[in-house]
Image 1 (tube, one colour):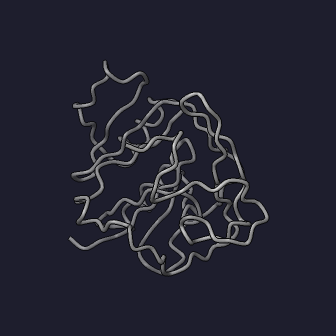
Image 2 (image 1 turned 90 degrees about the horizontal axis):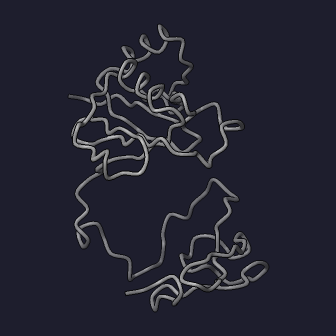
Length: 198
């Protein structure tokens, strides 16, 4: 079993990366787009490569032969998305009252060291977690499609638009022309709602 204190034989760590011309271990970004940060695990310090986003362009192919495909590891779907919130009651007001999501009562409240709620989104869930949010609330893109976001499939975007208008909740429409709407929850988490058949 690999640990953080010993390099993996298949993905060796690279140190002192800034200014070097070689490519990183994922063959995606030139190493010069990486900065060095320090990670602590198991009593020692080790320098880790941390990617910095420098472009909206990601290469189309990754020339790796040792990457498993989804069938190899049994990927069958998305189970849940974890969303941080500052105030659970305020978030539940949005997710339950505005969006109409129902609580999954199976959340083991006594075993989790923070307040939260599990909400059904079809057969999947959103896990609301009342924890400090390390992300800035200001300076985020106006259009949620240009930010980290969770996408929820819905039957009718126009009906959601009416609900958001009634509640005075700002939103933007998809810029690709497809039937989709972007908004933010009370903690500035971006949400996309895309219209699907059936």
